[in-house]
Image (cartoon, rainbow, N blue to C red; front, side, top):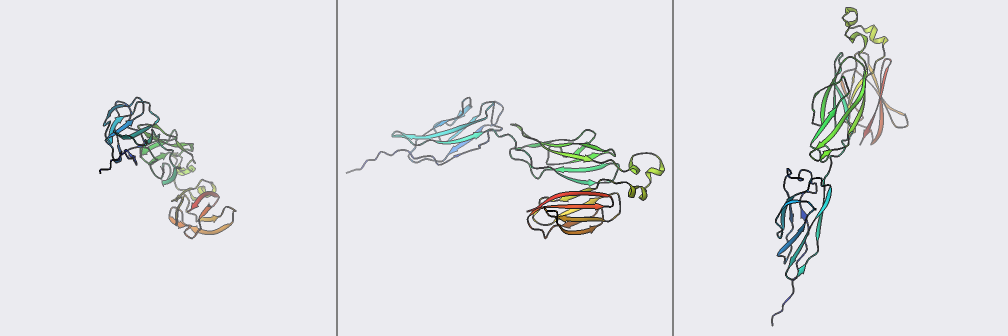
Length: 293
């Protein structure tokens, strides 16, 4: 005797290929490639692709290639294994055209604090998902010196006061994502740096500085951090700077006196949580929130 069986095709476990159609759309797009896992007892793979797709090759095999239609937003690719006895179950893969993700918050740090020209760095921690470049926009009267298209830029400001917005806008070949924005408030340089040609004003005048409140510029990074934080207080005054660390309830946890324009480490012994650091120099004051992970 000889036992005969009707062998139905096995199912496809996975369809392998990009779930992001960006770059694979329209006549100028790249060719997208999709491969189905081999199915048992199968001699034909029946594929369906989004309506309007062009250049489909490989129908009947476990590997196909094609281009998505222009204007494609989302859809499914399916494959059904078959043989002379019937069909197996259908396996599908959802594909979308992903726009760039919104960048993480912008971090500001000053790299040159001396007036009359101040240079600041602005950065985001990493390139957002599905993003090819970052388009930066800076306030009027500010000059973007370097870094356009990357995750970090340098911007210069003159001696005048300035308020405005720094924006990081993610771009890809699929489109433009949501912008991340940061409000900036740049104080005017003290009077001895206003550009007046008078010798009396251009000379360093400690008495004038002591009598004139000014905004402190502070670098604090990384923020958040799992260990210590680096802090530098940029100031035109040589007076000592007092640092006070407070918890969310306003309780003082520690204080430290530091020299301006020098880096120090703080917060290494803090537990995970949200804190504030208050910076005081003479009549000038600044408070910054920071996070310990």
